Length: 368
Image 1 (cartoon, rainbow, N blue to C red):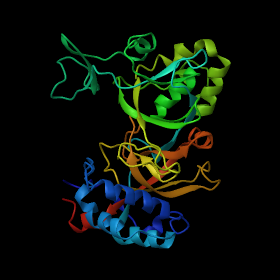
Image 2 (cartoon, rainbow, N blue to C red):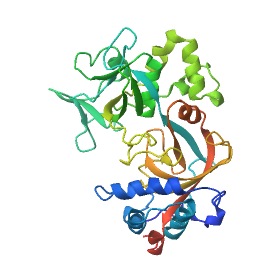
Image 3 (cartoon, rainbow, N blue to C red):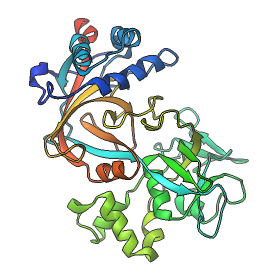
Image 4 (cartoon, helix red, strand yellow):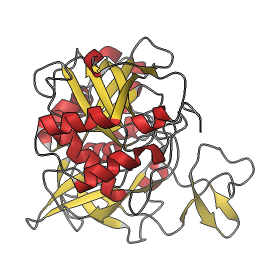
């Protein structure tokens, strides 16, 4: 596999704020991936960062944990070479934020809790180029199995109007359809159940259609200026226009199904696409077709100060992906769980510089 010539090697001294960043939490996140790959290796991305090249770094991370920021920094400097990741079609890269909502929920339907969260239906099947029926949209990765064969799955409007009613798929009930929608957007949530317990749900599958965000819709129809679209402004608009919630949300045909997940460590987020718990402020979602999970990225966004009041310049580990995260210099920063994390994630829309930390083993072997 050829390493993309687009990567532009630089020195660690060229990374703005590298010496001021405490990379210990990033090392711990990297170490979690190092243990996971013992059972299931990550797929190498199309940009040529071969998974096998991480072997020495993963082995050392498993054997010797870093105990402070200085040790973590030394680890990354010994095993990796930073390289600027050029953006595609724009001057700089771009970051957004995501988080794990914390929502009140009920295990049963009540007069208050009436909006269901559904588990994966039995007739939903994964499809690819091998089993996709002729003429079906090649974007679709899921379909519905019928006696006549595979067809496009029910979309959001159909499901919300009862297409899956009576199948016993409800795993929780929410009071607010807007809360439910944002849980769908984030793909996971902590649920404060009415019986006092704390549960976690996470992504299990989706209906398959393309995602259409409410922010873009509201901007297009002139309700919110595009530059002012944030999670907070969208929520405020829905609160002021409750009679139009279904009208806007059902224009997003994509529907997400969930499963229960354990809350092993309340300080960490849900287990995401890289199959390890996300680390607040240190895990980033990337384009999984281009990049290899486990890759460290140093991301500098001088205009972003929502995380700690300082210009954002942090080492992050690629441990998730998303349908809206496309392109080599595009990332979604995990802000954590709960209300405060949502306040951070909801305002992140910033230009950023991306530096991939490439395994030195990969570079030592040349670009082939």
